[in-house]
Image (cartoon, rainbow, N blue to C red; front, side, top):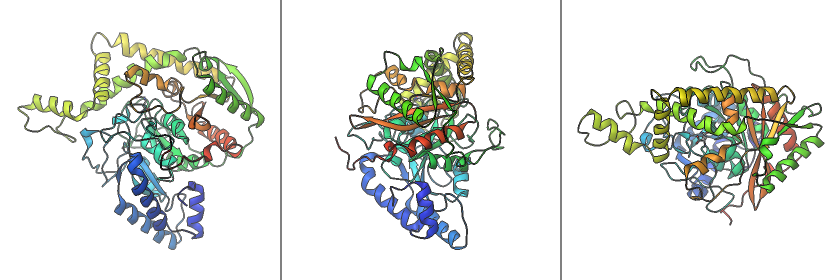
Length: 485
Ligand code: GLN
């Protein structure tokens, strides 16, 4: 039962062939035996999960219905959960318990979901491998000693290994799509502002967005239905009306134009990755789509622009962790200055400190115009590049990541890690939606295809992804547990 999709579980629960308590128990048993290998969870709240499951069963007995009623899910540990720790993968928030639920969490609860626990992630979502977590790395179920990707690595690993039915993640520069690619699951990054950021701990406020890591595009649509929509508590959430994202899943792909950016298929791309994405393109063509070569001329500028803007925003967002209001406080401070300095020195990990330093530098007087303002101008050009492309095509297809999951410790210098995100960063800078779907394997490791569309066309992305999944079975492959080679 635990290997089933949300849609299948919802139907099993509604016919009474399983209860939420039984299902929740089964997931907890699986977590207890398997998660010692994966470290996908930072916190599992067994009692709370079973209590919620019991309430869901009782509600159902009283005649209640909702898409997630009794379905066990997990949240990236960047979403605030009332009564359960929210650590952000950091020593700084090791013991932090939020007094409120994030809007995403509250909406899923309202939809009946049972929260199993909080998943591992890179500290404050900074990273591409989950190796930056204070709680130790999460592992990829597809290969021994392989990273699950990051920063939502725990969520991707948990979904792939059936440690939850579906999970939330956050995506600032690729953190939903890249781990989805590495772990062979479906990951959707919605349009910026489509999903409320309230209670989602901020990394880079103009880029962050929450979304699902799921077994199928259909499940991702079901979760998006629950979490999308305007939230008066988040001034950057948009008042554009939502749709029922399951409605368009079955639309045929005829008349769709799908662009293949020349710049993404350059000489440097691993030919095995290129071949898989070309094959995906041909499959979409067989389903009725028309393939078009396009240009995204500014795409090489995404990486430098992102690594100015994201650290700049992070440096201001993370200034709130000062040892005074909440989070870690050093022992026996000599004075206020010493408390600030040591609390931050001891509470943050190396990558977070690196980002704070880069960001503070880029924002400092005298450098602001040279770095931050320039990066913002480049951001506009990248957005224009995409807008121009969408005059001719409905969606853009590319690899999600240039590689499959690498071994822990393989990427020693930060810049080689930053290169992980070359295909995903531009999408965040432009604020548009993107999805990663399982598209094949290289040496037994999954590889994802990324589809991107213009603002608020999540419905189209889910439609293409669903049609592809109706005609392929990459997303149905399961890693062998305990982990193989
Ligand atoms: N890997 C990118 C970074 O480290 C993106 C992370 C994210 O999307 N949260 O910033």
